[in-house]
Amino acid sequence: MWRALLRYVARGPRFAEANERLRVRLRELAEERRRWGYRRLHVLLQREGWSVNSKRVYRIYVEEKLMVRRRKRRRRICAQARVLLAAPMRANETWTMDFLQDALASGRKVRTLSIEDAYTREMLAIEVDTSLPSLRVVRVLEKLRQHRALPVRIVIDNGTEFTAKALDQWAYENKVTLHFITPGRPMENGYIESFHGKFREECLNEHWFLNLDDARETIEDWRIDYNRVRPHSSLGYLTPEEFATGYANVESKKRFPPSHSLGCCEVNLQLNSNPSTLTLPD
Image 1: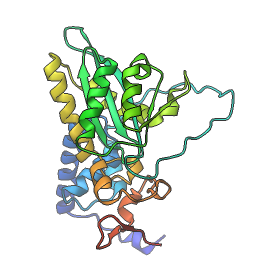
Image 2: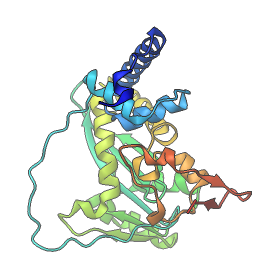
Image 3: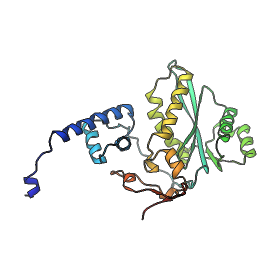
Image 4: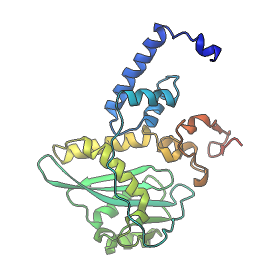
């Protein structure tokens, strides 16, 4: 028998009190962010000053039964090899946009138009209305053009709003390429599809919209929270705004992969005097 095991003395009430405070705070955060897993909750705890590793957070997370339940989907065998799309290498290189549908408390249908920067994962705009024709899509893009540079290409599906002449003329005048995905292959536009999964779970399914104005206000607040607060796993658990302002020149292949021990916190990021550059340790 190990001597350390034989002479182990349980920690005193001080540790138990700190553990209980951590447990209470974790329950509060999980209730506020019901669709977040323990990794993102761990990031929020670290931002608040808690000195705790992810394994301890995970243990309490399981004990409190805070796990996010997901429906298992049946896997289908692909008829041919899937071709991976080239990942964008800089901001404003590729935008993606698509529609999503929901309903108000009265049962009236509403549509949302989501526009995302595929590199920084910033959600640039979410337009909400009962009808979003092609002219409305052009209006939203024109509004974005006044605040930031236009992309090289926009990845879209083959919906009637995107194949209309109004959008085609706007793209030609602004020298933007419209890249249409293969019909029936939504995962060729995987960036926006992935976002819509989060958007549906964390916003649309969590709120009951009384009217159109309520839907617009709630969704806009959530969009700002998504860009500024929500840690993004593909960005090393940084927020899209943090990545866009200080890390936007990092190549996609150098992004930090998620791990059980929250590897993004174990990597020391050192910014040079030039804020547009990033030094990664060997």
